[in-house]
Amino acid sequence: MTTPEPAPTSPDLARAGTLRIGDLQVGRLGFGAMRITGRGIWGPPADRSEAVRVLRRAVELGVTFIDTADSYGPGTSEELIAEALAPYRDGLVIATKGGLTRPGPDRWRTDARPAHLRAACEASLARLRTDRIDLYQLHSPDPRVPLEDSVGALGDLQGEGKIRHIGVSNVDVGELAAARRVATIASVQNRYNLTDRSSGPVLTACERDGIAFLPWFPLSAGRDAVGAARAIAEVAARHRATPAQVAIAWLLARSPVMLPIPGTSSVAHLEENLQAARLRLSAADHAALD
Image (cartoon, rainbow, N blue to C red):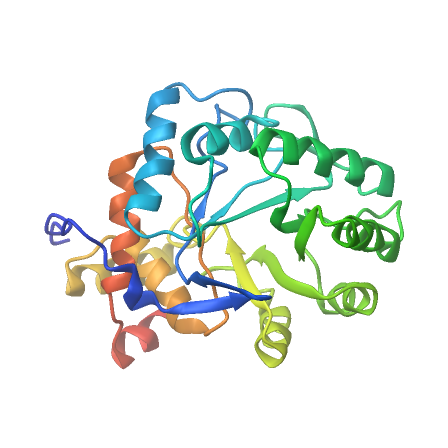
């Protein structure tokens, strides 16, 4: 494979375009802040100063949407975002999530009870050092709690001015429809990438109704299937790009409501990932990847 050329100084994120989350306009290439925590998404990062530099560099390069969750750390990611970026500049949208608890590294439990969501939101407000969260997302439906009750709790918080917009995550088409009967849903965050397109029907619903779609784990392509890895490597070689850049560029081209949020704990990898905004895949590239 041809070695990629050094990245230009600026990734020119304007090339990725913009989209709306409710009444907020953001660039269509954001940053996911899960990986700035410790191993197992648990505790502080090994290099706290580098995590702060990553966040500040993302904003310097034009990122206007940062996604996190109270369960990343837990709490660590939100605290680092506030340390690095508060008070937040105009136009920077900070999104977080609630509804998962953490019994230990790499372990996750669902808790979408209304009382828990209210407490989680209040704690996120404090950690993020803000009086209103731009986008608050239900991290996952809880099989023990009616979805309408969970989303209804977020609607109550929105009515109190603590949440600006509501999103949902890890939902199917039926759950999205149920959530929308309770509140206005501005975004969906589901797993979606070159090798996992199972949320295609949800993406179609989002396209139809103008709902932002945030694909999590956007860079898993190339690790899940040998055939996909080979195709990505070939396309990357043609463009003198990295496989990660190809995976992100494919997502950006896939749908106008797509908002990839690749994450990293390294400034170098951040700058490399954001270069995907410059990459334009050809019809032949799409044929190879699709």
